[in-house]
Length: 267
Ligand SMILES: C[S@@+](CC[C@H](N)C(=O)[O-])C[C@H]1O[C@@H](n2cnc3c(N)ncnc32)[C@H](O)[C@@H]1O
Image (cartoon, rainbow, N blue to C red; front, top):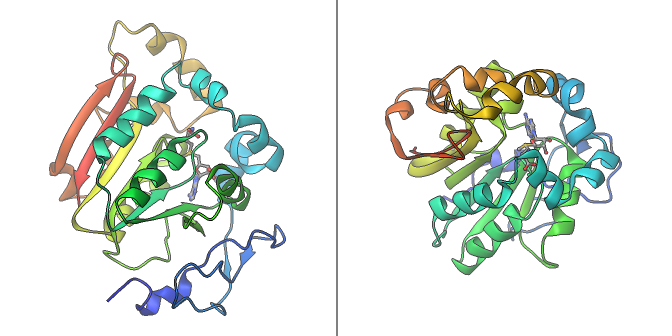
């Protein structure tokens, strides 16, 4: 049974690009042949933590226009954007058939490059984000006529069927979420990925004791990204993985003096 045949399909929708910014989203760009045009409406509410903490980085359309610059994201990631983007693409591999989902938008060229690999493999790519202007921004970065489905949903409560994807990617999402939302997001990721599929996580990590940023960056992080220091209190993100997945890590890599981590986990 395809994901679109299942009853949960009626909960799927894609952002109508011309819809008013009310977060009442309905309809579709009709990418799947059997998509129901009159899918029920659903409320997509920007979570409090995102609005309160990250309105200046992700929520306001003017903020998206400012931050959608690869050199700026690179600066924020201490010159490591390409290293991290390429690590994500390398660990996922070149052959990406079937269904891939990226849980939340990211600035820069990652999604465009991921889509190129997915398309070359004959697969499909969905990108989920709770902020509709983020999905509109993504569409501007993708090639004209692309078939990426943009799903306006909260990643911690996805209206997507169980075991419907072959792989999922979370690129620097978890450190921006309060612990309960982070754990709910991981549960959702493992619910929607098929058993034997892959979940790829890129995140901050606790830097080595000798890393200068361990002492210089933490105070700033605590102010700008209040949920991020919690990531540093744990050896790696497997601390938040529900069982049995915590013991199913197939790739673990630390980058830039352990400032960043890359984890691949079998669903
Ligand atoms: C993945 S992170 C940022 C990654 C990294 N800083 C970058 O841009 O390269 C930011 C995205 O996550 C989205 N986001 C945060 N919480 C979310 C949630 N609960 N559901 C869906 N999207 C969420 C934000 O709207 C934003 O587009």
